Image (cartoon, rainbow, N blue to C red; front, side):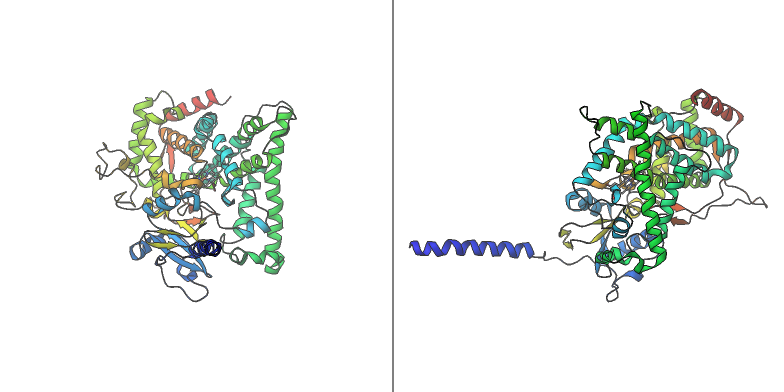
Length: 521
Ligand code: HEM
């Protein structure tokens, strides 16, 4: 009897361990998500267009449903094409869908290891997000309201007088807002060295080609080879990029810290982070590397998205004069020509808010958010989602779903205002487009409040004092923007277009000048 117990217990343990082993290996008995048939070895490379991929991905929804599966050089690649799929995976199961694909080229070869959008899911990412969430929280952002308003007023003065400077002035304003908020730095109108440094970095990254498509990103073991194997141009580009990234990480931070040590008050994100993390005993800054990394991340990733959104806003206003007139009527009724809007007026201007929401929906600047890597096998709606797949959320598709947004290609801010006589379908209460435009779950954009504040005050100020209008050619015929979009590093931009704009009246221009001279101390 005892002898059999002696054998049975280990046997049961072995059987249990074996079953656990089998379970751990077991693949869910579920089919893979459907998708276009690829070519042996290279997979679906030829199915993905070089431009505006989200449109092609959206077409696949009717054929393949919520999740489309492709392969790229043997690696599974999934596109989530519906609100339901994005919510079920990226939001509700955020703990296994919040990693990013490894960007070996940028990280290992260019040394860009410190930027939050590229960080793996884990403690370092959490620390960076905590810092950004506190430094860019809604209450922290209130400290930047006045700077944002001033920047919008200066923009209005420039572009109202000369609309040909629209795109360049928007770029300077947005970059200036980020540098002011992050480091308390005032950009120079022309040839600013800090702006030039950020632009050079983006240019060098753009020269590397589509992110994630270099062989070293697909086969990371290739990083053991010297970059020169892939050409002298690439190697030189990477050396220059590494040098610039090092400078952007360290120099602006050192300047703010020096100023603080000398007792110079330079209120900004970096100053408040240093102050909050400085030890009273030895003066050391806790988490210093993470603080300078998050500041440099703002500097390098916070510009293109806001800039693209404002350039889209210009197009929307030129093409939709009745919308512009309604927003101006709201501003005039509320402000009565006595003053210009501030960010404290935001709640009182629901139509202007709706214009901003509709710009973010109509032509989102990040139509595919930022790619994720699946961390575990999973099953969604009976479909097997493989571990280690690259996953893209097609935010563009969600933002153009006619069930949520009737006539999705039209620019209709009234859709967010149920009582509006111009709402084409008051029975539908659409989802807030910002919940798609700013990404999802644990990787959602930490700059959202700052970005919205910057967008709102710029839109409200411009509409208060200026009117956009289609420019005319020499024959007096209106020139319409062609609605072509091109890709930046991770963001899509409207192609340069001719912008028409003028001050609404002499009174509006005088009010603008008076407000600027009151505030511009
Ligand atoms: C209109 C303006 C903006 C839009 C539409 C936007 C959109 C996005 C989106 C879609 C993502 C990816 C989220 C995901 O993976 O699900 C993202 C990430 C991020 N954004 Fe923004 N963004 C904007 C402005 C800003 C600004 C002004 C800043 C900084 C001041 C900023 C900082 C970041 C950072 C650091 C990440 C990476 C988050 C992470 O990987 O955990 N963004 N943003």
